[in-house]
Length: 131
Image: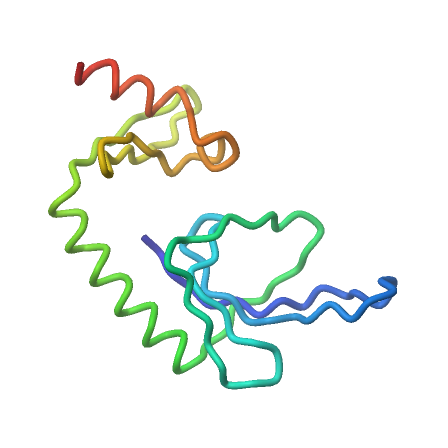
């Protein structure tokens, strides 16, 4: 998992409300693991990753001590989980390789389709193979 911090730089000037541009810790997909509240040092960590649409939003990669430290902690936890949860590599028709993982009895995949639907061809293929 490639965990990185990104500061939102979306221009919200056409909005009638103030929309804060926080700094987010993304899991390499479109899931937020934590965020730093705009203009503060307060970090909010989610118990489970929160899916977010990045459509029409702009982000720039940043370095932040607290978020980088949290990222290292989460990555080491992920390595521990990978040794517990079985994983399979599945090659798609386009040649991309996706990882399907069995977590709590449910197959999940790191492809975009799974991110939108919580289901995909790759996870179904592995589930069927392991029946």
